[in-house]
Length: 75
Image 1 (cartoon, rainbow, N blue to C red):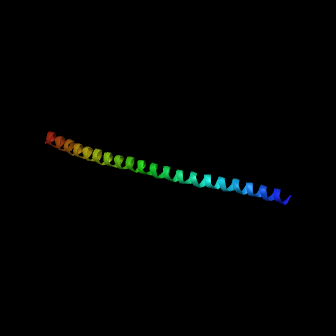
Image 2 (tube, helix red, strand yellow; image 1 turned 60 degrees about the vertical axis):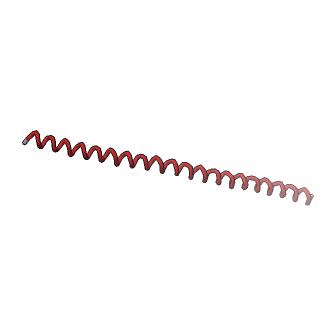
Image 3 (tube, rainbow, N blue to C red; image 1 turned 135 degrees about the vertical axis):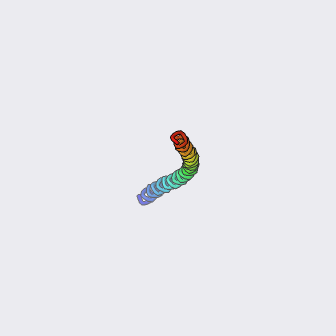
């Protein structure tokens, strides 16, 4: 009887240990995926900032040219 209880406890502990190993592995995989997503998002954000700066500069130059043309047309 005691041997049966010890065997059951050993099996239960083995199942628990296996599940914990799976959780640790899964958590490591998730951490790696999050790091990869963070790198991709950082790249996209940098491209968006560059595009915004370039388009802002173009709009500013265009506006300055338009104002100057209007000034010359009115004077």
